[in-house]
Image 1: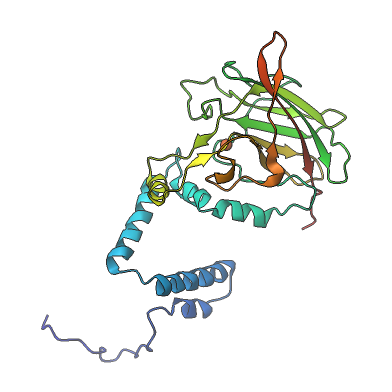
Image 2: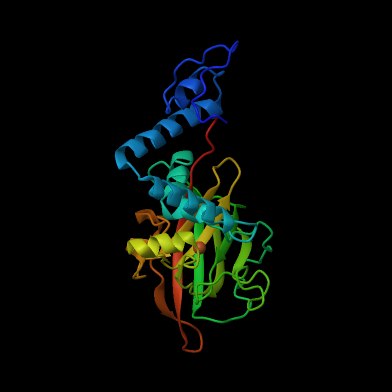
Length: 293
Ligand SMILES: [Fe+2]
């Protein structure tokens, strides 16, 4: 190497001058597709972000390092990228855009990472608490159509954390298999019922890059106590939602933006046979008709 700048090689066609941020112009010359249509605005937004924030080279390298760390914390058991999307409110936004609900229908919200499609069918009124640990909770509900009529034979899938805020698949050595989850069918009046224990609120994992980011910002990782429901009925859009304990102190600061006014419920104190105190939850889940695509 002689240390001198090389000019264009003899015989090569000259390359038109192109700005460093002309990636979107390159995309525009490609055949139109969903990928190019999404990538163009995304890159343009990122370039605009860089112009606005003007990161130093060190800050830019640190950002790339953070994204790399997110990948290193993601595998089949843990998905830090999903956690980031949840914590930034992106998952909730995608959910809202894909499943808008008409007035009067129960709002949908994120399913979260603990759903199991293979939970067992349970008899009407059965308990889903297989270890019996926790404050007893009686749940009775109805599934109705938007027009108000009952939906008989609807599938109601339920899953929740225990009183310590842990799902059974987080603690396979401590909780029975399929503890606090089950599948129920509504009766001719659209009703379903089961017994359980009060769910505890919980916090997103704090030992990874998402937890570190949120903690450094002074933002909380808490999720208020809730029960997950997924309801399927013929001719209706499937509803995936969570019902929250209105009295939970973390109700106004859900780390994943799942709380909506229509999903707050009273887990009211009640006395149970034998004088024991427990809680009771009554709810109505309203489904909307399947949209024609
Ligand atoms: Fe949850």
